[in-house]
Image 1 (cartoon, helix red, strand yellow):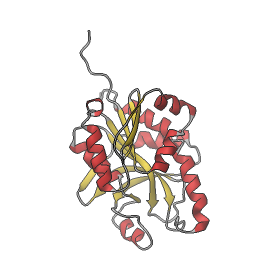
Image 2 (cartoon, rainbow, N blue to C red):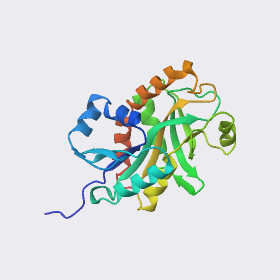
Image 3 (cartoon, rainbow, N blue to C red):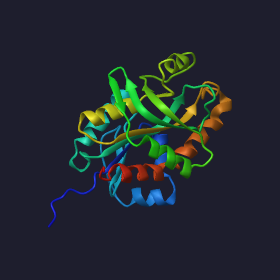
Image 4 (spheres, rainbow, N blue to C red):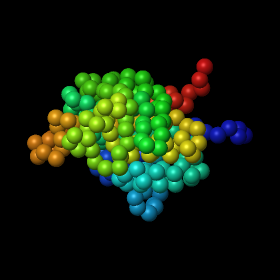
Length: 232
């Protein structure tokens, strides 16, 4: 009998119920992957489901919630070696961004540190194949402890960041501090400098971002398969 461990699983972390719903109502292939597993009951804000080597974690909103949830789940034996991918919605910082655009982080950063992402080029390639016509931006993704609005966008943009959210940086920093593993972050722009979601006219942008998030799981699966291949 072989004693070699099986492939490391994939942990997909999102913050909000609406993001979790988008992932859970993804295409038929993705539903088969996620829905053949089990549900593990747990105290809020954690809600995660596993099917084979894939788990989806709802962390709750904000960096502290993300840190607590990810640390707790990665301490569980089935997921201690998991690759981690942070996803959900984000605020675009660059002029010309639109709701529904995709952001692939080259690194995530917050005041506590910077985490390089793995497999960025592969994610960009697969997103272009899965979602033809959608704009994909690459660059640093910065963390915030609040929703980014108004002039703050340009201040964060001046640091070199192209997008901001509240959980990705905390998620990836926690993941690498608990053990060596591949990490990445892919976000969908829900608002941008010229398309702030607070305006009633941009509700349509939120719907667009939701539909895009529903379509990204196959790309995440492909990333997972490739980052686990032996390096030559």
